[in-house]
Structures are given as structure tokens and as C-alpha cells.
Image 1: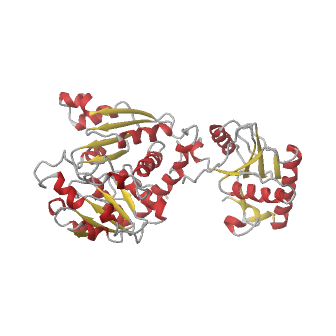
Image 2: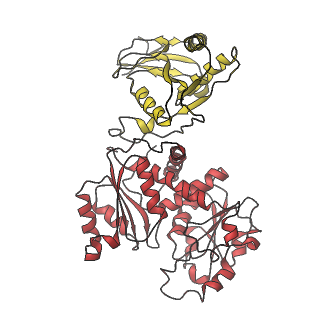
Image 3: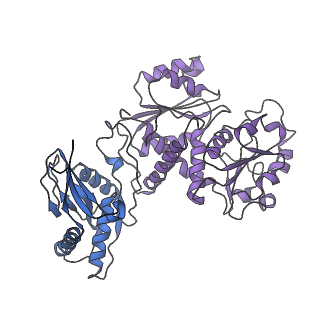
Length: 307
Length: 179
């Protein structure tokens, strides 16, 4: 079994076998981060560039730690301190970086499809670290890894995704992944945040959070993306929190051993009540830990060699 | 000529492992400070079997670790696809321990080089010893085993396969002609 692709741009195009390969490889990488010497020589001499046109702490740090633990050299470029501010186009930037012979490029961009565009002009593997409201494949992979490592499976689980579905690349990637792996996905959020026709992705849509959560094995709260909400899609954060915040009361109808997840950064008291975010059912920090293993797996599977 | 022939059967394999168990005890004067590390996957089963044999005469249980050497391979650059990565699990400190590495077949020595590099990332063992079921020669690195089940001079056109019940359903060592 191998990955038959140059890039990881989304979960949509991955097969079940490919997802399983990535998750199993990631499971094997967990151990490296628990060693006293957290480094293996696998990608020695490889150069990995992270190109972020949007802010990030988790994803970028996670990619860099993953690369460094595999002994790759990493260069990180932020749009604010690069020639982007001088007006260089994305393709020009990518082509110029390619001229310095990197082995893999990780990109995050606010425009959906930006990673796909540069993947088309570059010979090196490209990993999408989030493109607009489109996909965030590594987040969905680390979410699936977290669920699978605790529940032992994905198939047959009820997963509720709550919040701003329309702006969420995390939701989209997770819907592709979880439905492929046989989980049943239920969405809940204000009607203005549920995209028209999303049922066609094989999910069940609810208008009340309680219905989505009932007997759920996993509840994923999404971040309210204030930076993307150009038009007014809800009256106020307080009103959103009153109807769609995860709290002790509404989580009671979920399965006893429900996993509470959040891709971060958490707006405390809005998407989730602070005590719940720190409860025993919360695996929010485990998601972050697993993120490093998932990214190590992808770098290992994609970078270097003639494969 | 037959395509494959059995060079060690179940009884032969069991007797060989018994001898290696005694040789390990003899060389190390007991089990004090010993730790076993099996190289995935058949090295792990060999380590477990020899640990069990030693357990019949000695009181102390020898700890066993599992090592996957994939991340330390020197041929990843040229490999056509990434080898599937297995889990490494060494649940004890190897600092100051006498570590015995186990593998099924010693061939070029490159796997053992990778295994030693990996072990050294886990700590500073007092000593590393090597136990293999089959030594088939053709070394490409200056590596020798401390405990050898059977030396099997083979040609490069032959393949030596160790089959163990735990993985293959049968205990045997066979030589096959590569076409």
C-alpha cells in the first residue's frame, strides 16, 4: 500500500485505504514524540517550506515540529513579512521558492483552491494546511486519528458537528473523511450557517443542537470565525452562545463516554463552556498532540525519495 | 532441482533457540542487566521465545522491546514507495543495560546498522549484542552476530525465509531459488 499522489490537497479525493494508511502510519509516529531524543533521521537533508497567508499557531507549529522531528530543515514564510506585501503573485512566490530546491511545500491561504493552483505548477509535493472555507485535510486526519485511537473505530459512530458549518473548512474535510470511513455525521447550527444542499454530502442536518447531540459518540464544536463573517449572519455572539454553545446541560443527552472536540482556537464561553472544554470527556489537547503525528506521517509518506 | 528446500524444521528450530538461550546466559553470566529488543516482526517473536526459554530456569523476567527500523533505513531515498511503518515500543530505559538485539536473518548488515542507530537514540546501553537465527553471509558492513542459530552460506540468487508460527502459521527455515 502506498499513497498514489504527489500532494495532499483535500480529504475529498482520498480513498478509504489511503486514509487508513495515513492513520496507521500516524499511530506509529506517536512514539517518536515521547522519546527523550525526539528525532529520527528519516528526512535528513530535506527542506520543507511552510507558506502561511493566514495566521496560525497550532497548524504551523505542528508542521514545523513534525518536520524537525524527522530531521528535515524547515523555513517558514508569513505573508506579512514576505514579498507578498510588495505585490508578488502567489504563483511567482511559489516558483521562486521552488528555485531554491525545497522538497515539500505546506501552504495555508484564505482563497479556496490556492494550494491546488500551486500544486499544479510545482514539481514538489504540496500539503494544504487550510484553504479558505474549503478543506483542512490535516485537521480532519488528526480528528479521525483521535477518535479512532480512543473509540477503536470510526465506522458506526455518531459524530455531531456544531456551529458555523458554512465557513468551516474543518467541517467540510471532516464530513468527507468521516462519511467515507462509515461514521454518521450530524450537523447543527443557525440556519444562516448551514450551507444550502449540504445534505448531499451524506449528513443529517438539525436546527436544534440537542437533536444533533443526542446519543452522539463524538461532538465537535467549530470556531465562530469572526474574521470570515463579512455579512451579519447572526444577531450577536451572546445569542449564538445561548442556542448553540456546548454546555453541561445539552451534552447530557450524548453518550456517557462522548468525546468533546474542538479544532481550536477556542472562543471560551461561545462555542463551548469553559468547564466542558476542560472536562474529562474533552480531547481538545489530545487532538493537538496527534496533529504532530499525523503531519509526520504525511511528510514521511510524501517527502523525499523517488516515489 | 526443487524450487525450495527446508533447511530447519520445527524441532530443529526449537533446539536451536534453546541453545541460543543457554549461550546468552553463559556469555552474560545470568540475566542481570539483560534487556531484549526484537526487530520487527520476526525478531520480536524470536526474542519472546528465547525469553520464555530462559524464564524456565531463571527467576527474573527479561524486558522485551520492539523496534521498527524503517525510519533509520539508508535506502529510503531510492525506495519506490515508503515502507509501511510499524510501531516501536521500548517500554524501559536501555541506559546501562546489556541489550540483545534479535533478528531472523543476518544478511548485508544494514538492518542491524539501522537498529543500532535507533537504539542509541533511546539511550546509552552498556553493551549491544546481536542474536540471529540465520547468518547467510554477504555482509556489506563490518557487523558480526554474537549468537548465530545456523550459518547458511547462500548465493545471492537464493532467498532465505524464516517462517514462524506466530506470523506464518508454521516453524521452518527455507531456501528458495529466485528466478
